[in-house]
Image 1 (cartoon, rainbow, N blue to C red):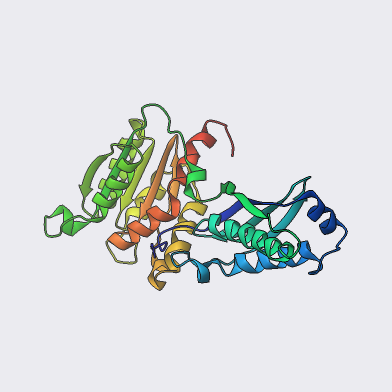
Image 2 (image 1 turned 45 degrees about the horizontal axis):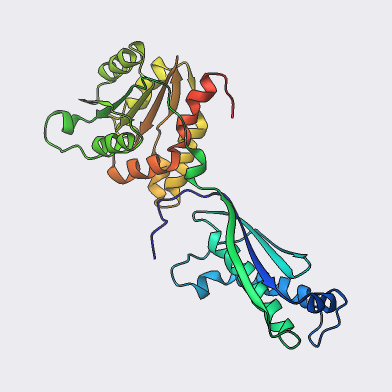
Length: 300
């Protein structure tokens, strides 16, 4: 199975449809409930709902999903019954297969219950109608000339005693969005960090991402430097990163990192560990880029 460990949970929805073709006289008997197997559509609805819940048991590479809503509905035409299945959940992975399975099994159930009176039945046009949810729904258009910087704060890295991994991870993440950031390493010195942040804000950087200095050590001062220059805090960003990390390691609660706005610059304090950085980036990107539309007055 493909790992979805790094994905965020979002509200997801999928709709699928399947069509059962039958003779007009068969559909007339269906409408009158004049069939050897009674209550065809009611049974098919229950079968489709049950099938959606069991999708991961039927299809090997599907992940189990905590489904919150399933609807299976029918529309009868002159020569067919159309089955529509809708599935919703707050989950890490999409619900296309759950919706398709529900529609398919409901159609198969109709086929099974009509076949004693119609040997010309056919199931056709099983397809995904729509899907919503996941990071693909939260793509953002960056401002023209978008400028970003990555700041590593670490005595050991600055002195050449330790190789930087976390800063490079941030650079790679930003590059995946087409952003080419500047990169710098400073010691755990509050004044130097504050000065560099102020310099980058003053020259018009849109985004500054720091790594390191967010813990409880005596030299962890990046948060304090950020607070000294920021105009206002954006607590939800840091809260989301910590909540995401907390589900993977209890140590995530020890990060003091803040997210802040300075003029038109967004500053993000990420942990110093490479795992902490990966998790924080997964938690807040690309949604954090929506801040620029909001600062332009675009709202949500």
